Length: 133
Image (cartoon, rainbow, N blue to C red; front, side, top):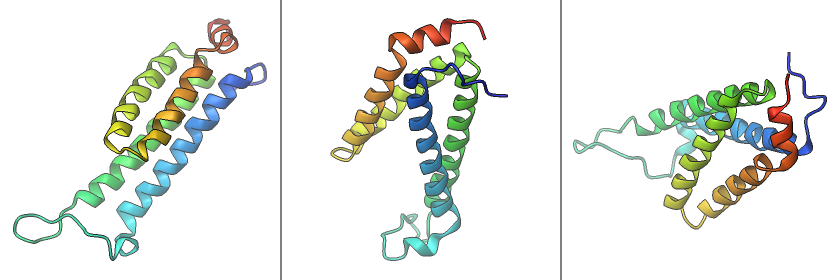
């Protein structure tokens, strides 16, 4: 059972942003994997032979997998696991690098990552994470 009664607002903020990211990844994954007709009119990747590529399906499955990783990180963070902080830092670095590849829209991703970093490095978050469960 999750015990967030004494969690500071900074931790709640981190959890909300990660939950929004998880929902976004699930929705995008389902759209990409299960509803290719939604993508009609958008140029689809194709193989050299002209056959449609499975890249859209693979991207959808990857988004769903990342959504599950975000849910796992949320659970670990709620349980004050040191692994959660390491995972969050790792995901921040990875998603920031991918944000650089998608400029100018990637600035939104980088800004959200900096907000998460600010929340996670706050004094109240550090105290809560270091306190006994």
